[in-house]
Amino acid sequence: MTRNYIDAAVKAIIGPWSEWIEAEHPLESSELRRFHQATIDPARRYWDRAYAERSRYGGLVAPPALPVHAFRRLSSSLEDPFDDRVDPEFDGSGRYMRPGLPKVPVPLAGILNGGYEYEFFSYARVGDRIRCRSCYRDIVQKDAKRGPMVLVIIEDEYATGDGRPLLRSVNTQIMR
Amino acid sequence: MHYEDIEVGFEIPTISKGPLSTAHVVRWSAAMENWAPIHYDWRYATEHDGLPDVLVNGSWKQHVLIQCVNDWLGESGWLWRTSFQYRGMTVPGDTLTAWGRVTAQRPAGRYGVVELEIGLRDQKGVETTPGKATVVLPMRGGPAVPYPFDPAVLD
Image 1: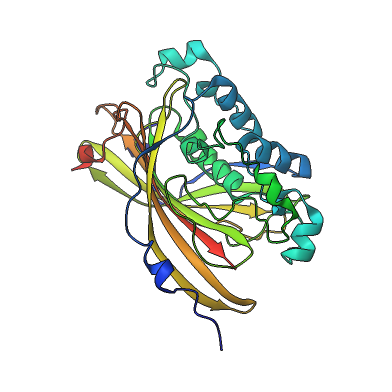
Image 2: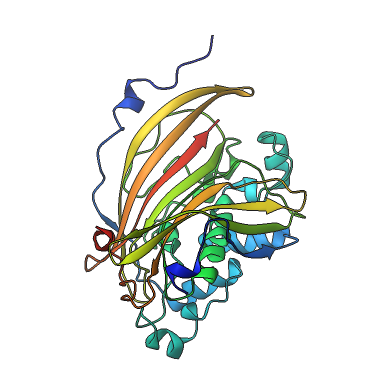
């Protein structure tokens, strides 16, 4: 019989929104450079300051969905995530799917990104402080050929520190 | 570009990335500080997770889709909504082509709303990332699409 992973502990984390969490540092031009170079996207609004200042954006801006990647390990974090690398179940994320949300208490080893829904309102500018709040919209179990998998549906809202909306997203993470 | 320039069935210009290598994956993982080993540890990916190879990040592929739509839109339109599912795995050696096709259009307020089917197709023709996009375009003789974008202007 297939184990039911959606127990009371899992149900308890569905629904509540997190507090607004602010990325540790404002969007940096070097961060933006590494991003658009890694995505092989040479649009001038990302690197040509004079062009960007004349544009509707008024300055260098980030690719639309960059805010979802803006939350990095804190500089004050003394716990090295690589210490878990000796754990054969180490998945690189430690089950923290968003900075403001609790871990998903499901003991499945693998995590895959299932997809996104986005609604865009504006782009983050260099110097913007990026804030995010999140909730687990739902967590459901499905049985696949390889065994059970748990779909974690996460809703996020991103805005700048001064309250300008950036985007909304709904992301599906697949635990299996 | 204006709303009146578009009709159902119109195909936007494609963009291609690849052949992708492990170096592309590692460059992205390092830029994003994503240390999930399925993206750089071949033994973990294949033996522990049962994957065919290390995987090109879905989080990377989404930006190629968005880039394709935004390159077409230029600075006059606005990519309002998009959604996509990562259905097919992409591994080093693959080449991805992003594409889009207009499926519907309608006036909304003083602007035009255009719906597209979008996707990422690999070199074998497999659709790895099917999705949709909704963009807003100015009407000929109408106001520019406002930035920041407020969906209320479409009411």
